[in-house]
Amino acid sequence: MVKASQSFEQSSVVGKVSSHQQPLCPQSGWPGKYVPLITLKSLLLPHALEQLDVTSCYAFCSDSSCPVVYFSQEGKAFDITDLKVTVFQKAIGQVADVDLPVCYCFGWSRQRIQKEIQQFKTGEQILGEITAHIQAKRCGCEVNNPQGSCCLSNVRRILAEIASRGGEPKA
Ligand SMILES: [Zn+2]
Image 1: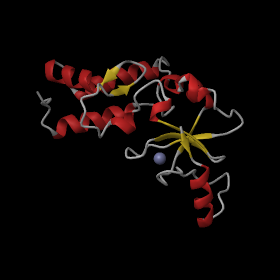
Image 2: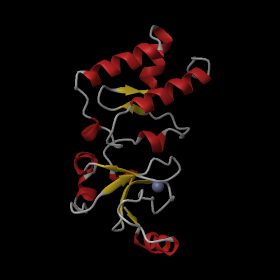
Image 3: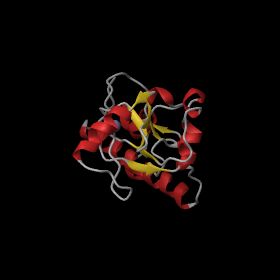
C-alpha cells in the first residue's frame, strides 16, 4: 500500500486539480486512465480491497517504472503488491523470466505468444483469434485485465518486441 496523500499535497502546489482534468499519478506524475470500480473489486487482494473507497474514482497508472497501479484524487493508492495478478505494464521491463500475462481473458502470455509464433502462427493470426473473441463479446477485460480495458495494444506491443528480436525467443 502506498501512502499518496503527501504527494497529492505537493502536486497541488502546481495547480488545483479539477475533476475534468486527466488524473496524474501521485508517484510518477504519469497521466492515468480511469477504470471501473469493478476492476479493482475483481483484482485487489483482500487486504487492499478492505481499503477500497467506493465513493472514489480510481485511475490506472501505466508507467512501467512506477509501482502504483491505481490511485484516487482523494489520496488512496494501490501498488503491484496489492493485486492478484502480474500487471503487464509494470512487469514488461523486468529481466526476470516471469510468464508475463498479455491478454488476460484468453490466456495469452509472452511465453505462449513466443512459442506459437516459433511453431506455427503469425502475429496476425494471434491478433485475429483474440479479435474474433472480442467481437463475439466474450472478453471480460473489466474484471480480468488490471488496466480495465482491451488488451490488444499489449498484444501488439509484445508482437513488435518479438519481431524486433527476429522472431526467435531467447533460449
Ligand atoms: Zn504511477
